[in-house]
Picture 1 (cartoon, rainbow over the protein chains, first blue to last red):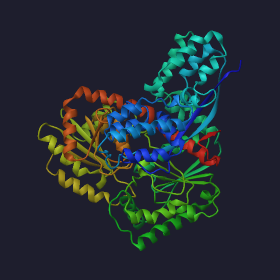
Picture 2 (picture 1 turned 90 degrees about the vertical axis):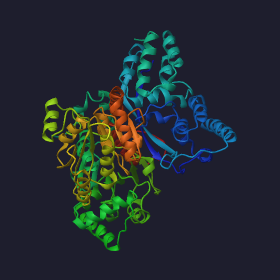
Picture 3 (picture 1 turned 30 degrees about the vertical axis):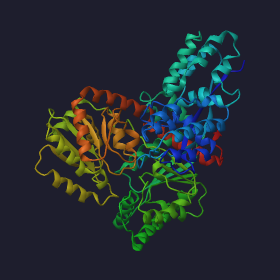
Picture 4 (picture 1 turned 135 degrees about the horizontal axis):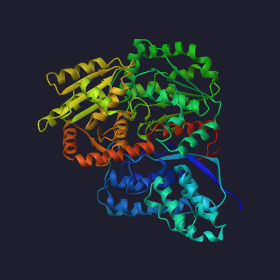
Length: 215
Length: 412
């Protein structure tokens, strides 16, 4: 069996060409027309963006709805979306637009944010590189994960879900080559990663594998 | 002492250090030149002071050049600074000419090194025209704007934009600061060096010495704002807030800052602060030399609460410094301070002296909460706002601009 190749990635945010939104209607209209990378960034890559906050919600749209336009209903509806459940970003866009259109039909006054708190549409460029590190056995995987950077955790456990085989993390895919690692695989796939920072997620992955017998 | 990455092991994980080395290895030997307008004083010089040796340590061939200017030139660029931050200023045609001429003079000296570099990073507006003065440049040029240019005085930005537009990329600290430009604009928040004299852990004896030196009362809560004496840092607003708090409880205030060689306006603001503080022995206004980093460090550590009540701010690194020392920070609701302060979490955002006074009293009253917020704040800084993160993002940018690959994922 091939070794597990530990990749790392670093991400750099950049502005998009989409103007900032000051209210729900502008958010809706801009989101309808932005590049898919913008949607992906605000749903998935935001976890790699430096922050002083550990927000309630894991996507930037929900956080903005709650903190800056004070729409807690919308925040809850957007906050529960699992972006990795969508194999196609256009489907994710459709789902978000549906929620926004529904909300626009419910509210009488469309709240605006304060100046300086607009929603800024950004995207990112990711640089991926081979760390040179390899894992040869499932038993060595927990320790290797424990030493990974946040970039590696993101790349192998979250970003991997966009790649073939779609919807699976790289660790599970590799472990599927080892019939006796079913418990560990199962634990990884049951892990609810929605509420964890990458640092927390690293520890949870190690625990999930160790509980599955890989240690 | 030359800085190297291994010194930071323990503060960040060995894996983080290794990641930087791997990013650097793939850029090994690239000639990188940083250019700014002052070797000491102000946030940019502090960043370059660590960034240059650490980039060298990961394998890049890096140098730091400083443009030389006349007092007229720095008066003009100070007006740029104010204008870009929204203060109404008028730049005369003579002043624009001074700006261009000083850059032309510097270009004669710097052209050989700049034209040969693989990557040139120009910091802030002062040296921005250099790119246009290096017609045989072979590398990529990046303009790094450290200032809050979210609402610039239109005429100032219109005058500066042609000097910046031709760059291959620009960097801003926050998306709020970015402007419409015909090249990619990357977002890199600044960071602090935990081993610099301004941030390194200090012995209790060192803290006591500073307390004694400045005649601070160990029994009274201490409020500290560390900033240049600059109108946008609102030292008068801090004094007003202090006076409001003082009505209900004993408290003392330190306003401490250095001058910078490219800031001719500081003396006037300092005099206004001295006048506002006159006759109050619990207000300590300290004009510190540019190398008083350990004194600043000690004052922040002695503080009960760190203040940064700016009305306009670039990123506001003094907020991160305060948070790193485990202090909640009360900051102006502006610029990069908004990124750093989350109410009840790492500190409080305020808009007025009254708001600042209210939050000061709240935090002085809730000592346990103050300590919990301080511990949490330090961990956020460790995770996201130490120099290792910023170095990683610069190296990432160097890979991106060097690759000439327009895709959103680049494999190196």
